[in-house]
Amino acid sequence: MTHKLLILPGDGIGPEITQEVVRVLQALELGCEMETALLGGAAVDATGDPYPEATQKLAAESDAVLLGAVGGPKWDVLPREQRPEKGLLGIRKHLNLFANLRPAILYPELADASCAN
Image (cartoon, rainbow, N blue to C red):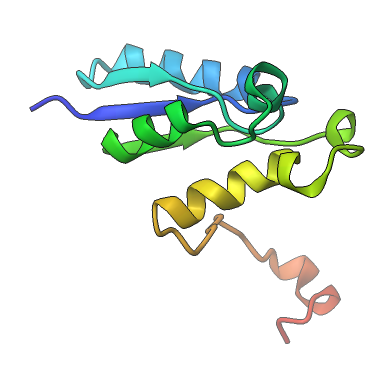
């Protein structure tokens, strides 16, 4: 069974990072079917919408989504409904996602400088 992976490069450093992840996935030969779509500022520039209908459709049909960074100063002047972050919030709501988990390490040498104690 082939899994569908949607690649959303996003903005800023996002396209560079997602490009390298795609290279790794291709090297692993996992047999994923990959498709790329627009989200965030790149989507606003191309369509006027930070989470276009075409991306919404592909996201709903995908088994997983690889999302790069979105936003940047270029789009700070836009109305709220067109800001890149609106695309990020839109896809989270659309796919019923509620958490953005990132691995973290607390080094013992820094423990006294954190609120963890």
